[in-house]
Image 1 (tube, rainbow, N blue to C red):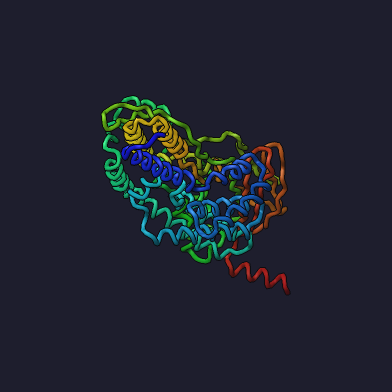
Image 2 (image 1 turned 135 degrees about the horizontal axis):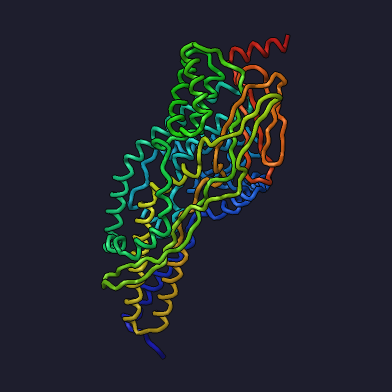
Length: 492
């Protein structure tokens, strides 16, 4: 009968503890993967199914998980697309409340984020990218308008502006934060710099991410869609010259970001004359066209040379995120009346907005992934060496299997993203016809939309795919006093 010696028993206990640790790290993971099929249903044009399923997903994360913010954001986005504006606004409100609560807490330390990378990255709490936060505030403003509330949007637009200011500040802090994380990673993986300077890694990294150099942020992480809608809103509900002044300043900023759009220059000239009391507000209809879907994150594996303690090189495949762009969208929209027509032109390239922030975060993401891979390789190497000392082939085999399972199941990239944003936002405007009706042509389909002959009309169109039915929302913008007077006249 075989009687194990103390060394064998000690290593067996080590392997047992190592197995339990690895199994726990595998099982205690996030559940962001359940969201992906819902996002895919939406992106393929199955909007009703996506809206139905996202509610259950969001409610299952309502009490607070790493996925709560993204769950409520996607719920708000999908419910809005099917015209459930009140439910959409409630979901976005939940997302904002969760973001506010998270912002009151200190951010994760570099050590905590590195620890999460050793398991799966969706263990880290999703706090929302800065474009997430700006879009949430914008969509809450649009939901309010769709529901007939023209006062609430003011506060939502103010919050969107604060998020942009915070984005500028955060971008200035990003370099210091990245250096802090790199220092923490070096402690865990002393050969990190050697790996990142290896020409094999540099070559593969350039192949995968070289195209990101084409994407720069608008200004300092601004969003021309948010600014332009706020400018049109400010003109439409203006009760004093200060509202026109706000519109003029916003349009100046948009004109600087999108100088190739000719309609913006005409709007800027109008806002300037209104602010100087040199013109009266004409009767206009604005159309903002959200088309397609923004890039989603997917993962691929790239081989990375990891230098072990012995200076031996081990090629380790690590999962990395990349942006997957969609080209399935309606290219343009036309709006026409009895005597005039206009075609939408690009206002905000959301692909560019998303890619710019992804590019800014990429160095930190890569540092975490390489350091985590180095630590895992080191742990496996040490465990295998300890197992060899036992002379027991079963212990050696068990150690290798458990280590391989741990490395494989935790080798995941963080692919969480707001996948239901539009690819582009375009806009056009024309003088409102006296008939009180305009025609929108979206691809081969035409839609007649009722508008008010007086004041400013705002039409929002959301087209997800060329075959899915678009969401069309129309509302009249007017000062609250005018709206109250109009309502009183109707009652009398």
